[in-house]
Image (cartoon, rainbow, N blue to C red; front, top):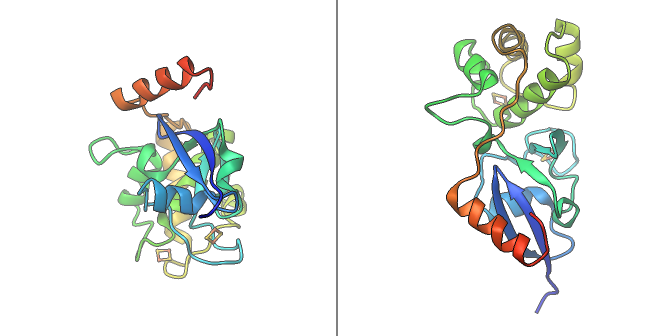
Length: 183
Ligand code: FES
Ligand code: FES
């Protein structure tokens, strides 16, 4: 039987406890252990950015992070950025400006774009293109993606909302707190 270690992480506002192999990558923990398949795997070379999530508020390629390194951290995935009834401004702008075709790169592009606007609410086109250098798209030619992020900057000021914890998340957090583990 493989050796597993506990990881306690808050994902999209919900406190989660996982037992994972130490070598498991965060992207696989999100997809395979938590069923959050909006975070994609597009390469095995850390080049494509399809796996981009926010780790403690910073965009990271989740294929470059071990799940155990996220212990105690807050992770936001594309599922937690907005909802179908309440899209994040970057999601809304991708919709309005046709920032996607096949959609494979889109979650990573949106997470990278939201991270840029958090750091720089009014970027130039050059700054948007620079921020997306780690995210590859084989469909769009990037133009509409860049236009979408520039448009989102106009409408949102770059605010990245964090979701409200669910009842399940609050209960998990209380349990962790009682165990002295935090969450
Ligand atoms: Fe992470 Fe490609 S799957 S960079
Ligand atoms: Fe297809 Fe970007 S929309 S890879």
